[in-house]
Image (cartoon, rainbow, N blue to C red; front, side, top):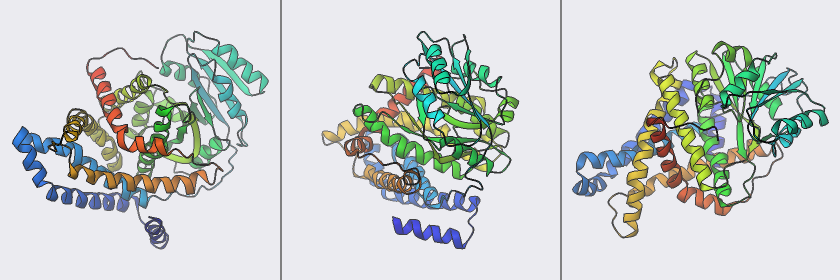
Length: 446
């Protein structure tokens, strides 16, 4: 894997490879893989067709093998092609405002503010904390943090429940060129703010936002957090890098991202949506703006510690994706890359539903010797998954953790469970979110 990476690296140094070339080359190789998969899967289709008819067999296998295999192959090639441009100035001095929307964050808000105080960014940092009708002592704790840490900051109150209300309230008080959103339970590496600003200052003028890299802080708490550590470290980070390569990171996540203040104001701030960060990002892309990803701008957040909390979170994310598709159709995106990246989300409900109602029952049947749905052929997706995660692991360790003097935690049990069982929880949780949105059930911030 190291050799392949170094070979591509030398190739890109000798020959300039355009984003367009990388995009179509990755698709071409992914297509070859899918054709190969189709050719060798005919016996599988034939056996399953005897049970559910040929058309249904094709639909099931397409959802659990063909499309996932294609997407994984495209991801692998894109990761191998990816080469982050060097920033022009590692130590910018631009002032920035950090917005923190807080709801019942009495226990975490002081620590979050303390990490802002420790930033190595040389420019002025102002902190605006918006108490979104908290029922605890969030506001007094926030005031204590600002005063004791001697930060330039203020505390606002937003009585309407909803993160988008809180962020938009805070946005009206922003006077700097750049604004960063940060979750109240998230802490940032000491160079995180500097790296976000350095990236956008080194980018073309039509780059309107830069997403930071969010990792797990509470991974040692229990088995659920151990598993999610690998999702953030490998899964989410790989998707962010893929999207960043094609200049269309689909979610400048509210947990930690930087935006151009003027552009956010021009699109009317954050929308009334459960996935407000998804919709606002897609609005930026619709305006022909680009959204980048900066892997060195690292933040650490607390992830759900229980299965039910995790299901609520991921179903909420799934609803946010549907909201984004409803607000801005993929075919309305002006650039071919963002048409494709947002278009992939159109098939995600199909993949999640197929996995939930076909693959999981098929796995249970396989345990009793019935390989109609899950059998040897499905294992072809596993090598691609391991290769893509291996590539990203090496990248994260070499180009992110080492420069930031961070160490990758040894979490072998969490990794094994992540590989084997994570999707079995994720897809049903997402399917539940699609159902919630379809039925227009009440939305909750947390």
